[in-house]
Length: 216
Image (cartoon, rainbow, N blue to C red; front, side, top):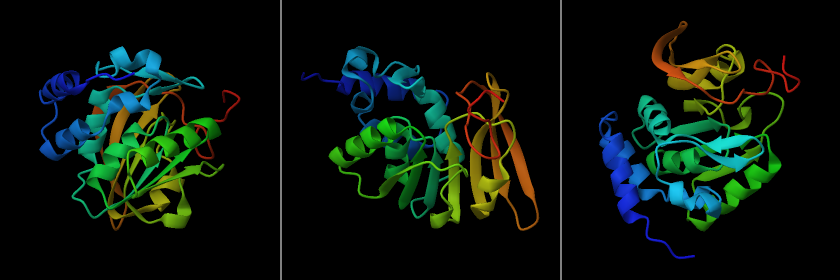
């Protein structure tokens, strides 16, 4: 099914430009074909500024939120980045446009496999996709210069802070299972600083030092 998404993609980027100032982030998002990360039945909505279902109760995130989270990471091109919650692989593709290396973890094997396949088809060779373990993140490739979490946590997980380099940025939704605030946490030599980027709504982050899968 051949469809030209160039106009819709351009209109989305112009819409995002009202809120996002980092042109590198906008350029990266303009290069990533969002339609490749959603089911073909949703291609008509691929460039609307809203989340879309991808299976397993998960969604591909709203483009504005993706752009805001990516901008907050302050990437310059030589970073080692961790994403927690691969989902469709869309955020990982944008990170791959902006960083040296991306490690992304996903707890649903089907989504992880599909994301890895899509990223490979699109030619991204600086992304590795892993099936998430009980402990959050992927300590084997730590420390990370930046970590982005695509699910809501009850608090800032110590496991992820431990994997963050000094001076590194962690962007994570924190709050209840149903509503959160997006936080930017910067790791210092002694402690952290935290900036509240505003309200958001994500699926729960499942794992040690986060939510359990049984609802607690």
